Image (tube, rainbow, N blue to C red; front, side):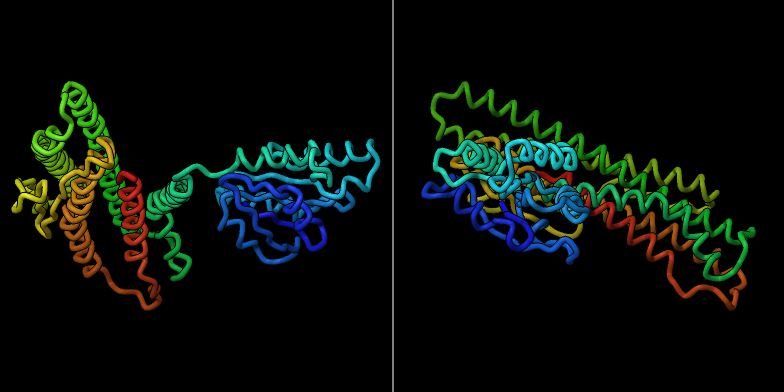
Length: 393
């Protein structure tokens, strides 16, 4: 938790009175100076909580509101305002100040600054707020995933709208009107964006299947373990064989979903291009789970580009983590395979567009920006982030 405030507002007094002689379990307080007109506060993005110290004798300004907005935008999970120096005001004035600030911050908690006495109720209230705001284990990782999810949404929106804006951007740079040629150029971009959207949709469907499969596997193994009297024997003899069989089954189903999805998208693209020589996917992707080459491992996962060894599950980590860690290796290989499997389809589309562009007369004022590469990069980034978010913790 970071205590933020302008110089002289009582940050050090606040920290010393709140902590006193009794430390708060799981709570660390650090001070951070701040000026309302200064640069964005780095502490807002590097902390699990922000406690803004505001003097009762001062004036609430736009800078204070902007700081709280920055904290919310940075996904800070705990935000509070402490009004210091209330002892310099009369009782009626104190109430008006607290009401005024509360109206400015909305749902954010507003607390009275702690007094000097050890039994001061305001001190107890601030301490209770800090204890309730202490980050539980793993909250930092959840916060990072929420930020990544927002970034993924932005990338997906950018990829979706790229086809609608690139032709207009070309018109602005080149001074050309939207004639038949630029309309056709926009159509190529839209095809690329639509194909990317179809790939992202397939990633989503396969991700749902994998999550459902993992939950079903854990449920079956948990029920099996509850019926076994000797846990050690079950972990070392029965569980590896069961997990290996489950991985083989998941790999086979995932390969089927990928092949079916790519074949459907290849047919769609051929129809869009009126293609006489359409690209067709292979009948097999080579996603295979084999028995281990050595007794100390569970299995090997093989794709056209690499072979990954799956370690034996560790009984000390518990059954849920064992299932999650084992299936995570297969899931990561599935995402890589899915990304590489679509490359020939994107390449085929690019080759068809190149042939069309070669037939067009080059204009002397053609823009130098490679809009095709920009659009493809945005689409690839959207796919990468979404795939990573669907992977287990």
